[in-house]
Image 1: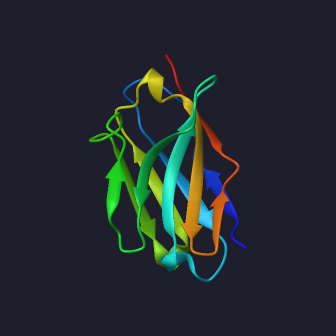
Image 2: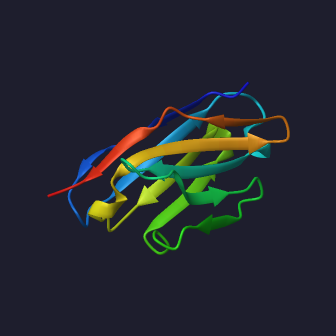
Length: 115
């Protein structure tokens, strides 16, 4: 069973930056696909970015060019670097890991972009 713990959220001004981290338990991290999702109040949860076990990435159009997803398999950690943040980026951000044998979610970390 995989446990995911997000960190790095907080309050930031528009135009600022944050880096989120998601630390995973287990010994098979390198085999998992990973993703970041977000959910704003009253809205559906939406995909932000994904990264495969091979390192391939994709992004939602709304964050493309501003956010970067990466992974460090030696540290069992996936990151989301968020630059040029906008108020509409405000949401709870969730880390996800999936593989043949399971689908796992973290508890989420709050990101608030406000002046």
